[in-house]
Image 1 (cartoon, rainbow, N blue to C red):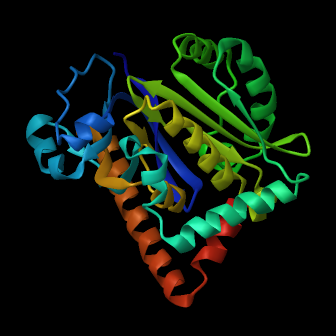
Image 2 (cartoon, helix red, strand yellow):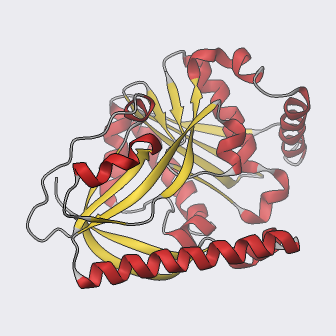
Amino acid sequence: MQPVTTEIRFLLGDRCILRGRRQLMPLAYGLDAILANTLLPPAPLPPGADGYRLQSVPAPMLHRLTSDYPGLIASQPSVYARHFIDMGLGHDGYLAQFSSKTRATLKRKSRKLADADGGTLDIRSYHRPDQLDAFFDAALPLSSQTYQARLLDAGLPGHPGFHDEARSLASADNLRAYILFLEGRAIAYLYLPVVKDVLIYAYLGYDQAMASLSPGTVLQMHALEQLFAENRFRYFDFTEGDGPHKALFGTGSVPCATVFLLKPTLANRALLSGHRAFNAAVEGAGAWLERAGVKARVRKLLRG
């Protein structure tokens, strides 16, 4: 494993204001390790590496980082709920997790979008290698317009290496991808690699102009119905980062954190101190906006 260029971002909402770049070793916890509260063994730091980026550390294990990674300084943990779906519930059991009001709302959203397209939903699946050119042709132009791509650099990758990886996954039957169309135009996509028997929520994007039709929600529900029917998967892993979409669809969650561990140089100390102070200021401003009742409006303005 080699270090990669990693950004420590100063975020105002979803907008990156500043960023510090370091060569970090990425260590990511899979859902099985998280549910078992298992700490990953640290990989040795090669020459030139500035430290580690630990993703989805189980929150109960955070106190062990200083002893397991001696001589490094830690960033303020970014704590969130890592949501997942227990696919063993089956489709009917999964739907039973929702209140009757939520089930009615989800059905109404699907019906509303179908009515906007002549009465039926146009959702297409792309699981085989020979289907992926069509998937990327439709999904990439949409992805480039989403706020995930514009503000977070988290859009669907378009480089040849990613396409080759997708074809390799599809050849092994380890990829599930979907696109929702409206009047023949892609308005939402979902890209799910499979690791063993766990579906990975890698990329979701939708046309913001169509937000009133809830395309991301409708596509998620349709995909889950198909995935439950396969009776193959153990979990649907929403990966790191919290959010209302993940909270709505998840059947469980575990507290996790992203942490940067850096060598104790003067530059690294200044970076982490500045990052901590910036986050505290943003958190304070967010609390004030919440009390003023305008936080959601400001967040929408920041997303553009």
